Length: 252
Image (tube, rainbow, N blue to C red; front, side):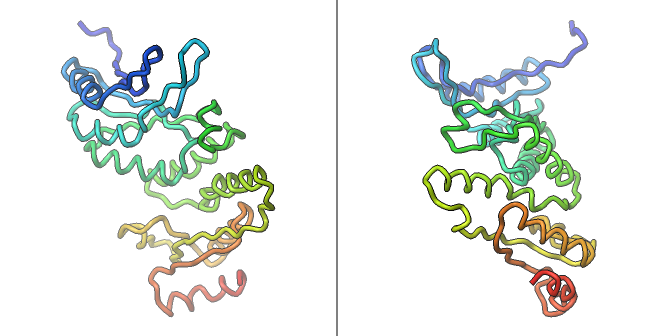
């Protein structure tokens, strides 16, 4: 007899706290398949890196979340498959959106994107991830991810690169090198107008809009530490180059 609520099952992803034994793929997929048979609504994979506890003999590692989620999605058929929960602190926002779309395709529409702000435990520091601005980074990630998953373009494209340039700054400071001595280059697709043809045929999200909007977006890269922007025009023709002449005049 049901109790009127849905149930999900969190799959084993971490080494045993006491013995350090890792859950095998056979064990994980057996759990997922059995959960489907029992009628669980969703099976979940945790997004963690390493856990330390003073009561454990040593650190305990986790299987990588996205790889395992794709594998589970490919081997199941009825239960939804979700991330529990993916950390916005440890993943680039654009790649989160790309991974979500890929996993949704693999699962036939059963993927559930669980996304949170993450935490700044020892694993984050050891792997070189940022440990500051947890909430604001999460908010910034949502501003990029939500429009992408809805099929919209995003005017926050420069913000995608902010965590990367910030991480490079921290590395330079740690080794005593002036961050300003290293150039930062980024390549972007630029398509004048609002047709968004480049994105529709499989390219990455392009910078689109009016000349003024394109100027504003490209100029925003400077604010996140980018020192050089390479433009890939779409269509990649002289006509497009001429169409962008007012923008180029304002930028170059």
